[in-house]
Length: 154
Image (cartoon, rainbow, N blue to C red):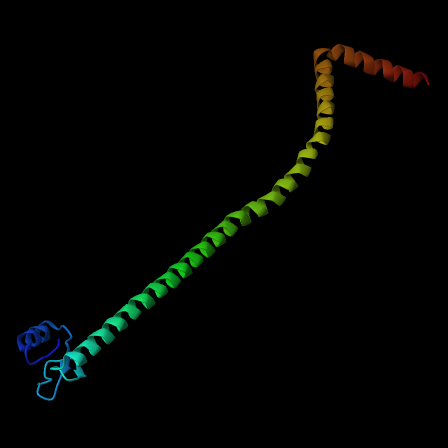
């Protein structure tokens, strides 16, 4: 407000609503109800112009600084978000890196079944030998008797 004397009703309403009041206060004005007092000649147009221009420049500077700070904050947030994404990727890749040695360990295990495959024909031979004994028990007994005779003759 330029003068709290001429704008007394506005000062009362702002005070009642809790709105801070900034006003130019001269020696002939009551400062009651004014939150921020600016001591000045409220009748001189030069004084009013000077103060209004100063306040306008301060407001512009404040807006500029606010925009700069907002850009810095946005950049910091982006950097923090990128760091989080990188950390999450690292966490996701860590199990994969641990899984790779497990896969490498699995490869030698894959080579081990080859000897097992060599053992498998022995089992097949055993199975083949068993059915012969079962299929022809008389022949097996006869061959055993023949072997016994050979050993006795020697």
